[in-house]
Length: 229
Image (cartoon, rainbow, N blue to C red; front, side):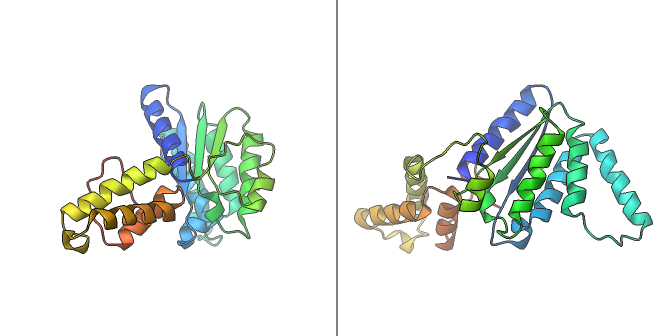
């Protein structure tokens, strides 16, 4: 399972960051439906931006890189994988510890995500003890092979089925009460069928569940703790 697990980790670390000694954290959610969210270079550039914005000292390497590119007339284009790797190593070295979270890695471009994993591995090697990387993904063959030998925690589709169904029940009930679903004329039998169908279609993934509900034009605002991007 992905999405929900990585969001839990992200929220836990954000809370820890507020209460403990400061450390760096960067997060990226991959989405094959958006070009900027399935491209490894876009992913790494987003991580560089987040890491550089967490302290004035960390901002300086990015400023220096910008000035070098400005002097060259920006002829080299956007940051590539190699330059992102160099900057991330420099940035990680500035923090006591850095945690990087990559959600839904399987939705990253299949042709180039192997190179992305290589970059992340080289960052870990260059910064031993200073960086931890949390990745959530489906068990695609190439990713299973690449991540072999590192700690893995597997979550089945049924592990959060009850939570998904409870969430769907709340949203469907509210939509019926507000007359946003079939003008509120929904029998208990039909309501149970809708909840079961949406929950089953989510296949353990909250984001898929949200997309299904959104496609039905149900209002998703007002649900505490929920962020949709």
